[in-house]
Length: 247
Image: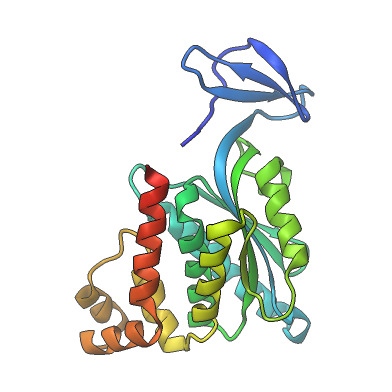
């Protein structure tokens, strides 16, 4: 993973509003042009940009509740791996949101986790446009000030989603194909299925017996919910995708 930090002041060139800097460890950082601006970091991210479906039918409290659920899911992703995965969340407009995760291999897993958490806790659904690539993020973590190809690609794709499409991947090819198939499976999740799926989707999830105990049902009920939700096939697909991306 490319993760970049400012350590020197050797300017190599201008990138957007920032000056590109290089250090002897071959890491790259960006120093914003204005003294009032803050330092920026370029890294490889997966970016998920979304909006709530039929948000005009929701009360303002309903919108806030749904977006809070997505924010909580994004924060939970920070506990997914060691060393810690960094996830960032921001609201965009009235019913929009964006998440950036500095572990691009988890892009589809993250999108499905958000869908599962939202279905578990509400009747609201969201569209999600996935993209992976480089972007520049202020060291404050403020996504509303982030820019770069990956943020542009995710945002543009969201604007193209229509009909019953809830998940799509800007990278195209096999990534988009897997995402569309996962979308088809996830669109049929019941609340009980989503509850079990959300508990088992994290890559460091507990075993099924512990999940059953934590949500107050039997292990057999957890197994049934996962099977009927198509989780075994989804888990195999995610493992295959992530193994390939680690190479």
